[in-house]
Length: 221
Image (cartoon, rainbow, N blue to C red; front, side, top):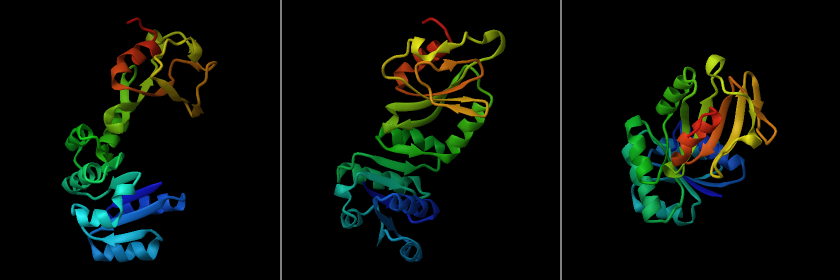
């Protein structure tokens, strides 16, 4: 895989090193000369000193052959412009961007850019601790077309009867990814039981979220 990364700060350096160590080809575009020098010393990736909002530097990075384009600066505007140029001018199919201001997440998703907001993620993780019987969005993929969600199965009087996965009327477009049961992590298969207190993680589309919730909670729709 060939990845172009915008931003040579802490996050950009980490992603660049991680991808390179896993055998991928990586190019980093960074405006600040001192960061470029640090990247050259610390990594073996190609480093281009320049502004990723300028088409010239995207051309130098051969963005047209990139499999993924990742913007990691702390400026949402710069990340948005760079990702849009990569998508529109160079035909990059997958663009991922750091989003500093949570309210901008919807804008990035609407434009087909996969947003990563640490602020929103922290808030959602905190909410997860207090949400039972409610579907929680962990992250969005492919511009919001696919969702990774979590549902905590209620205990006590509201608890549904334990059921095997094979008996659930799940839609074909939904996949159960994992079940967290106390300290135990279960990778579900047909014979796995969904029990009260389980935290079930699923991959699905936004249109099917209500149906999945009803199925996991044993409700009729």
